[in-house]
Length: 465
Image (tube, rainbow, N blue to C red):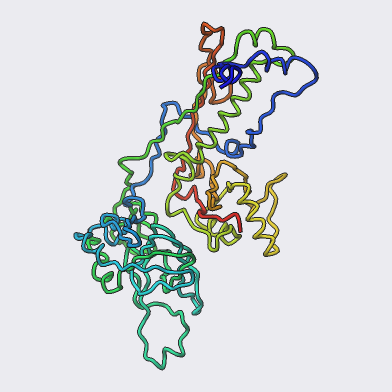
């Protein structure tokens, strides 16, 4: 290491040589390529948090775990973890999950292969498209299932051979899928095929019929969202006995603690004293450091494994693309899962991929301002904090915002000592023996979806095709 390099490595603050770049000639303020529009920070409604944590009270729900099944493999052999079978409501109270796990049969499928056998299907790896019976005998697309998902394939009715030839390939099933494993509400899977190379485990229909529903008799009534039911009577006449009811609450609601982003800015007093004209050196240092803090804040709001939007979305609100690239059909499916949506968030490359899909179909999205397109009236905001994997896969987020809409809200604390901006403080922490002044910059934040359908994610979005 040279002398100049060693001096740079031990440098604690801006040098006078660099400071002089702002002290002569006509010039611009210091520029920084890291600064982005930060649309998420601008559109989030911010909730004031005074106690350091925010509790989300909800109705009592009877869901257990994350609803997805986990697997282990030895070479090419894949097995379901027995206790993970309790993630399936039909097996939640089953006594012998060890024995049940041993009855699953592994199938390795290529793209286009049909999932064999009627019964329960566990997707260990890959993507499966499910089909059901349409109202008029057509083939209905029921969506895509991927790693960790499960669904039941209903048994087809038995018909005499002559009649079978005349019947359409899809007819309403007389043997419904087992309770607790039916996928799309009100729709039964009649057929499933692989979109990508897949590994699935299946449980034959006779085994599924034998064990499904055991222990369900004493399970409390719930609505379609898994919340404890509110007993009501309607459409009656006369003087029937009305049911008694109450709204039960979750006994252990989740609390979101405010996260923090901090740094210590150092400015040499000589720089602040001698090179403050025409631009204030301390203010310029603060401005750029605050931009970096805000960039990190937005990154955390999207990617933090504890409260970030990508990791905090309910698993029932995560869907997969039908063909890989983000299509209008995929965004329609994402919008259909919530009563209202205010904004999409997508990586700029994902927005470009969506634009290509629209162009190929001769569809022209709406506009929601300069450089912002919209789909179904919902603006698609660019956010480069959403990661893109090495395989060219990313995600698209959709949000409903605001506490009054039971949507997504940002959490912050304002009124801090030495507050420089709302929710961001700059504290002078002293001057050391090297005449370097230090400033502590702190900002506190978090984000929370108030109910599960406030936030949805389209996963495995291909941007390179």
